[in-house]
Length: 144
Image (cartoon, rainbow, N blue to C red; front, side):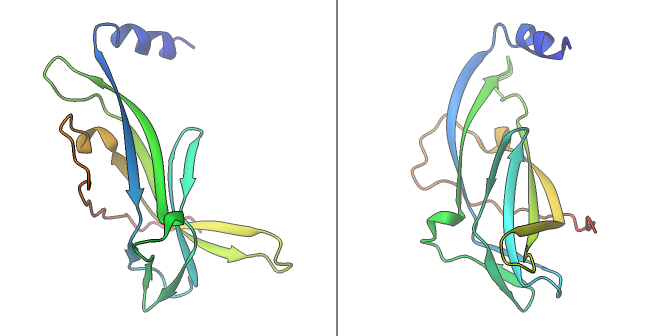
């Protein structure tokens, strides 16, 4: 109950910065053989974004570089610590299978790999028009 209040007090004298972070999904490797289509989901609490589904071939799902549905955009507020670093801002990244229901009306997602991505480690106050590519290693404990 008081955690939100305590966070507000701890951030009282910190500088606040807003960032637009674009996550451009290019590919997932090591996809299990039973998966036909894969999506990448990035989430923090109620903020959830998901890429379009990509077909899997030879254990890899790839998205074309110009695929706008593989670009996940987040507006992130970061707080600067006294030592010049930013406070942690962790998001969950999940690689999921996208399975069509038998009636074709819905798509079910099952997580086959996941990791945590700390956006604060990739934030800088310097201008980077093209961004910085980051490769993530996902842990493979399957959800089912």
